[in-house]
Length: 391
Image 1 (cartoon, rainbow, N blue to C red):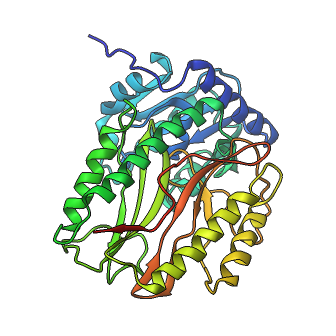
Image 2 (image 1 turned 60 degrees about the vertical axis):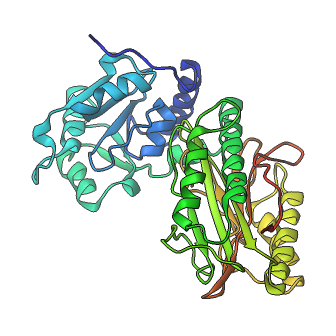
Image 3 (image 1 turned 180 degrees about the vertical axis):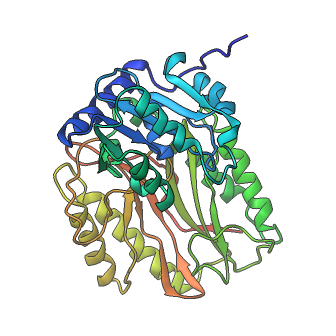
């Protein structure tokens, strides 16, 4: 029996709209074939979310064809047929002989395909930033007659402006995120292991909210005293104790779309220092949200933050946020001074007032996921914007 198509996250028309935008950019760059190897961009253009990060795969978007061709390891073909909108004849599996082979790999199958369809001597776009140097060299050596064009960020920049359908899915993800944060507030207590707290949060992120389950797990970040000055650290085997501060960052996921949030917790009365930092960072976050509207720049938003928090005696060296959507980060703009990227309706950002540079043993986090609107901002995450004081 052949595998059936699963329930698609978006209708076929939505994927064709995205592909049309990509093809317009290809035409501008004089590219006949775009080889998409970034996993998030493949998700965006097809709906594919299965994970096989160590096996080369690629989506070949031809400016002359309506549907792209997806070339991946043969054992992953059923997942592609099940998850994506692409028709069966556009999903091509390469053999196991190309797996674990030091001389050839799945990218050779992609290159062979370009020869088969007559695109090997045309303009070929590559996401060079998503490839190893060896893989990029393979394409250049095997395609001597092609004009290779670096299209590393082409699809990612298109992804920045979401459709209303994408915004709907991001709101579902945000509701799951909020549920995860509130579950943390329910379970964190003295004597509980960090691992057990995270287990409860993860269970909530999988069960979901409002009848919509989480469809994948993004790694949550948790640190407690005396490690709150660390960033991007996961839970430990330690237990919480009276007086512990806990920094938590989580993101619910729906069909690859993530809406992160950060909150800080204190078991017992927070220190005066923590309260002062919280009040400053909260004021900065609210100043930023008050600044957001279509047409303002990332720099404008960052400047509003720095003006506000510095008046209250706090400085922040790290950037203040980044675009978010499929996966945790869209690698394009940054909310930092000097980034003149103009905000447009339906751009979505993780506005992060995390500050880990106060000293090595003390930091603080608060963040929201928001959507840019014509007249202002819509905050998608809705957990209480407070310093959680737990007993």
